[in-house]
Image (cartoon, rainbow, N blue to C red; front, side, top):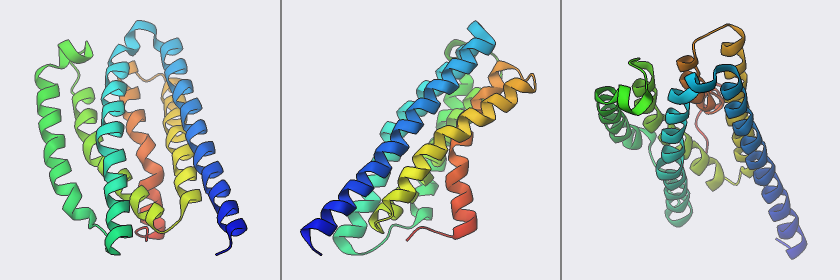
Length: 194
């Protein structure tokens, strides 16, 4: 591969990932903005779940993405999703149970929805990290960039629909999970990445 082709590929891949990340950030801001404006102080449980989502993105999605990518590049072998999802689901159950036991202190509501969403975030973040790692290992960075943009857009669109339907504020915690729908749909329609 010539230096010029490699450079063009790096710029294209970087631009795709950068644009996807920027759109993800803008839609995240939009999600928080419309939620706060629609619900005011009642948006507090959603903000708490958002914080748990941020932790799962940093502590689960990113490390799984890089581990899957490193293994594929280093050994030429993929990482089985089942191998990752089983412990992630178990950890998710623990997170949900703990969240449920302290839900009024942590989420300021007695609803079961926020702790259940928090528990679901762990396997969902694992799935996302696995998919992005596989797609990156296959050199499909434009798909990863698109996925980044769609993740945030899905959250914002579902939040707007819920707000428009007059749903209670706590329902927007489910909109946080909606960010994983583009990955699930990609897997359902196109099969596994790589």
